Amino acid sequence: MKLLLLGGNGQLGRELRRVLPVLGDVVVGTRNGAEADVAADFDAPEALPALVQRIAPDVVVNAAAYTAVDRAEGEPDAAFRANAEAPEALARICARTGALLVHYSTDYVFDGHGRRPYREEDATAPLGVYGASKLAGEQAIRASGARHAILRTAWVYAAHGRNFLHTMLRLAAERDELRVVSDQIGAPTPAAWIAEATGQLLRHGLAASGTWHLVAAGETSWHGFAEAIMDEAHVAGLLPRRPRVRPIATVDYPTPARRPAYSVLDTTKLHRDFGIVPPHWRDGLRATLDGMAQDSRDMPAG
Image (cartoon, rainbow, N blue to C red):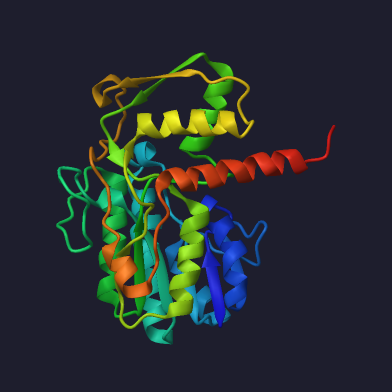
């Protein structure tokens, strides 16, 4: 199997670089070609079909995206280029070549008014530009005729990159008290597990194209996630002291983009079709922090 991985320097892309080579030959693309085999600029969607034709992969794994949720409100054109136009260009060329397109989407396609975990077929209603651009990408892929797997995930973090976990660890080292939103509910999901599950899905094979929810089990608030980060990081030796974490309401932390208040995703279909069992979000966090602590211990002194 030959795989083309796009977005190879992001937090998910780096984990996919670790997982995908067991499936076959992997060609890695990044925006400017740095630390990669090829350049794949999602700000220039028109250049992507020629790249796919030249590489001739069996599978295109698209981990590239515009993910700056708040900035997207002022940069809708950039968000739609990367999240809708680029996936559409990829899907159209995949439809012509027969390649399978694996594409990641988001819980932000929902409005958060639900009272139970969202299923794949539930009505979408994004609240902001980011969610709207990701939904447009989904719709373009489905309309293209390409074989595809759209994997919606949520609250993604990793041992590297810019994410909520690293923000909390940085602030914990600087402050005695943190204030974190407690009325938005979701499932923190480690990029390492998303990559592992993607590999499992590809090994299993797709009987048909579709959309699946790919998130950790359980649910918590951002405040609950922050509390768990402090507890687990302290136990792992990553924090010498544990700051207090005070809950606040969304209205007390205004942002340019509105976010869904409840965006837990139902993974029943994922388990039914591929036998994939998501870890509980707290177990995923513990494993990530233990890995970070081990890496810290393995670093040479000085």
